[in-house]
Amino acid sequence: MPNFEQPIIIPKGKVFEQYRVLTPEEETKLKLDNTPKLEPKLRSASFEQKQNELITIEKETIIKYFGEELGKTIEVPPLPAEITSEQLEFWEQNQLALHYSPGVEITKDNTFPGQTKKLDADIYKWIVEAKISPEAAKLPKGWILIDTRAKPNYASGDQMYENDLLAPVLEKLRLAGYISSFKQTSSRFNISADELNKAEVQIALAETLKIKLEQLDLPPATLYNYLGNAFYPEWGETNTWEWFQEEYSGGGRLNGGRSGAGGLSGVGYFFA
Image 1 (cartoon, rainbow, N blue to C red):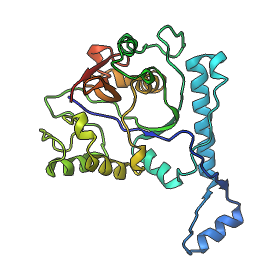
Image 2 (tube, rainbow, N blue to C red):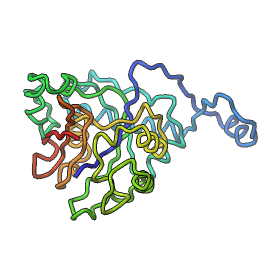
Image 3 (cartoon, one colour):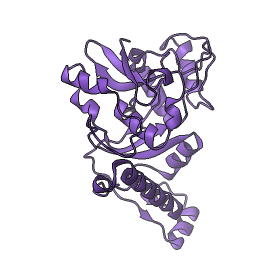
Image 4 (cartoon, one colour):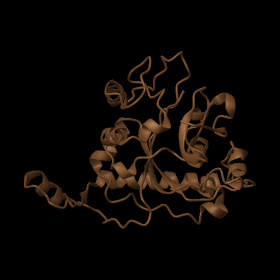
C-alpha cells in the first residue's frame, strides 16, 4: 500500500546570501540584545562545524560511489543560506537528514562502484517508449532533505513508521476527508498520489517538516536508489513500497522499494 518519503529539493540556480561565523563578542552581544533582527544572517560556530562535517561526508561518499575519476570532479557546495540552526536541529531530532545529490546521469551501462543495486532496466525502456521523462535517469542536483526511516513491513494495515512526526497531521487530514480512511488513521499507508498532490495536504506536510511549500516533493527513483545504496540499504529490505516523483504516461506514477520486487532496484507504476 502507498507510503512515501518527503524530500526537499533546493531549487538550483537560486542565489543565496552567505552566512558568517560569529565572534565571541558578537555572540555575547546577541544574547544580551533582544531587539528583533530584520535580516538575521548569523550562524554559530557549531553550525559551521556541522556543515563542514556534512560536506566532508558527502564528498567522501560521492568519490566512493562514483569512483575517483568522476567523484573528484564533483564539488559539494555549502548548505543554502536559508537553512537555519533551528531547522537543522529540528530535522536531526526527527530523523530527517540532509544529503547532496550531484546531478549525475545514471546510464544503463554505468560501472559506478557504489551502485551495488542497479537502477531498474525498465526506467530506460520507458524513457525510450516516451512513457516517462528522460530526466528519470538523472539525479537531481542540490541539497535535499530526506526522511531516513526504513519502510515497515506490511502487517495487515497495522504497520507504522517509527516515531513518525507526520502521524498527527496525517490523522487530521484523514478526519477532514483530504486523504482516504485507513485502519490506522495516522498511517502513511493508503494515500494515493492524487491525494498527495492536494494543496491542503501539501501545505500541512510542508508546515510539519518546517520547509517551504515549493520545496516539498516525492523522491525521484534515481535518488531513492542512490541514497539507498550509499546510506540506507534497509530501504529495500521491507515488503512495502514508496511513491516516486516521476509521472508515467496516462496518469500513472512510479513506485518502488519493495523487497520482493527488486528492493532498491525495483520500480513499477500505478495509476492513482
